[in-house]
Image: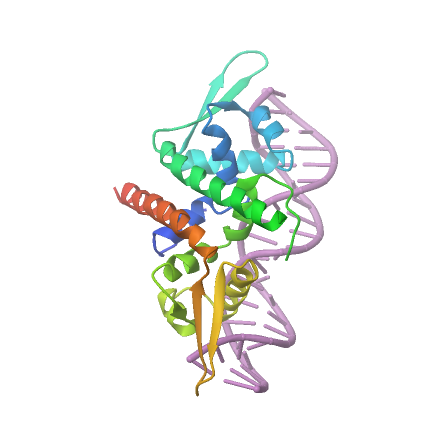
Length: 107
Length: 107
DNA sequence: CTGAATCCTTGGCGATACTG
DNA sequence: CAGTATCGCCAAGGATTCAG
């Protein structure tokens, strides 16, 4: 990817997190490390492909770590890095807004 | 639009704000009402079409108001609604993250 | 100045099948 | 279990033109 977005900070952040699933993935990792299929179960709508791609992107951005336990069968855990912890507040605030939005539109 | 995203709050919020420009638009409206071309100047990359479409979407979501002053030439002002003010924190947090991100990647 | 209309391209994303 | 590889769709977005 590496599309040079010369824009401002909001644009940069959105380019990294703006996909359909990325911030949602992070929102689940905030609670602690998760395995691949664990994340799939938490997000019934996501495809295997997108989960992989988005996790790779977050990994490349140093927001998430990928740890492989060489057991049989293989076990892979994803967790937020220290940098990724910078997203805690983002997730919290967006989640809060989303909740309010759903409540409002339900009425 | 009204695409029924049955997902969780983060997914809902991202579906509304996840586009390339929407949150950026909001980030400029946080500082006060802005005119159409004023927004265009602030976002050199955006096309006329997308600015219109995204503003309409935000308007339909009751986050932004559109006020037409019947002068000649016409003057149109966009401003955040009370509901839209719920995005102040979102913008602030995302902006902060984006700034940190740019600083980190500059190093 | 603020759009609407049209056409076209891109890439985000899903579906499916295959693998260590 | 945790992926990779292909294929193809379609909505997001850009460029250009026309209009009140």
